Image 1: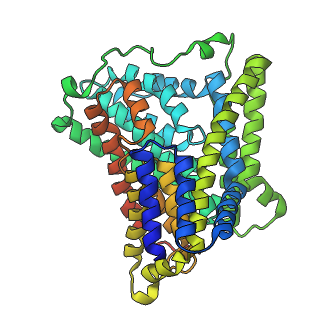
Image 2: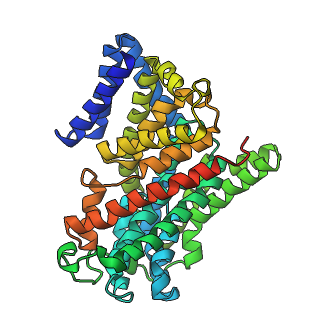
Image 3: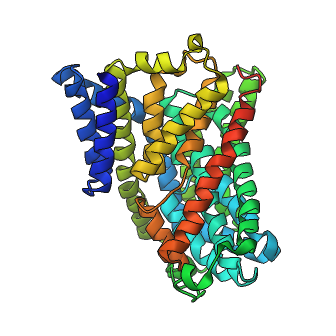
Length: 449
């Protein structure tokens, strides 16, 4: 019965969000309450599971999410991210621009919340599209979409990435080492294939585009231009680059067997992101007024509050699922004693995450829910937990579409029709998910401890 009630709870959450337009936070808590009460674990045990699940995920990744969003708010205020993508337009040949844009979005930018990324990058993608030719806008739009979300799910500190790490109790540095390869590689292959689709008639300009004005009018840039001087590009990106280097240093030190407290401290993700926040805060105070810096900080706090709540209650649902004893059922499905090959285990993990994303419309909620469902059985599988995490990331990327708020923001900012958005964002995320799956399978062949 636990499996049946879990299915009912998940379906109910999906229906509440999609059909009845409930906020995901409310829907997830209602789903968790139903599951706990219907499965017979008791009223107080249900409440305890909800609060414990929330607290555990916040202990693991709460500060990471908060620091990451605040860094993004600071960088937004000084125009750092916009400076970066504009520099690409000047430095990269037109035919390579989609690859360069996606590479930056997938590797350097994941600490910036996806809504901020698309708001800042969309006008640059549109203005540069005319230099590429007839397929310029869809190609740049596709590159922007897969770049953002390949980084979001695979590259630390992308929200979905650190959520998976926290829920599955993975090592942040190890995930970074795998993700920093798989994320950009997925994006590059997707863009290459997508261009071939565009040159073979995939795009119909008259039906797929609504707004042909390529001026930078979609984003207000007065904030960025108001400062009399701006930091150099490398300095402006240091709040992101420094934490990534610190985390990578800790990961490589761990692989080398260097277990020294100061090295572990430097490589700790929370410490690294806090250093990034200090750099971002100091830089913002230097280049804009103290009041403007505080406004940006306050805006970041508001944004992080919503993200933390939905992340936390996603963890609550996962903990209630664990309390129902569903882990034993899933363990029976995933255990090696039943002769299930590693490839099938990866496929099942991918499918759970992909199904959740298609239903709920949120990459992060899909990743969190799938990780919460699978977390109780990961340690007993004949496969490294990091591979399960990467499979969940791959699945949660699948086919972002109309039940996502991001879908509509992306559509408006890039001047596309609904059909055009389906043929860009939905298409490239579906392709990226399918392309990354065999890469994750290949990674499972590596000797991972």
